[in-house]
Image (tube, helix red, strand yellow):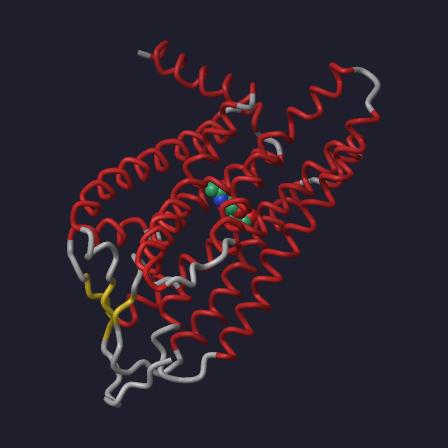
Length: 319
Ligand SMILES: *[C@@H]1O[C@H](CO)[C@@H](O)[C@H](O)[C@H]1NC(C)=O
């Protein structure tokens, strides 16, 4: 880490974004804007149909509605800033603005991890214990389950963000990223960040490893239960109620693993290219999953398709 000679603390940060690639900036501005609109529309429609259609008033769709709402919040906490950084090269952001943005994105990301495992539990009870499903997944259970996902995500983010923003920043204030991503900001601190790194590792275990393990175990039980169903028709029907969730989980955790799991290039000449591709991948990662969730759920789910069709037809008939 470079220790700066200047001891003055910085008043704010500068987001580098894609400033070095003006041609890419324009393309990505249009692309990300379009994807953001699809996210707002897709998740908005999903929230609307799960509220309006009484056949979708079940715990599964309650969680799905919460996931859509979360996806809207998550992208809204970063996409407007990303778009702005494409229009304003070397965009400056105040220290507190950066803290708020970091807090919101981190909180939503952690909440999503927990919420996805709550949804896996919902599918586990529905398939492995169908007779007790109405009792186990009562309103008194699923509302607190969703609420505790939010509480856990927000608590984690309060801890991580306050730890990061308490660090001294002096001299270098250029964030080589589109947003105040926590790792990119930690790199700029002019103090020992080992405590932050340790607490990030602990948080990753709690919010990534444990949910993944939990989801994996749930699906082992789910698959075992489905394979015990004697008729092929019954097996197909049981599987169809959890295939959408399984797809979302694979896409969500798959992109995270792809992003953090791939080896870094050691070649200094390749570092620039690597840097650019890392940035673009993380940019896509932030918008692809929220965009895919409603698409996956509406393509793989007859009930959602029927509800959307009804909604459109009702609108037409009402006119
Ligand atoms: C998501 O869950 C929380 C906590 O149970 C609830 O208060 C909130 O209304 C839900 N949001 C939506 C859009 O359903």
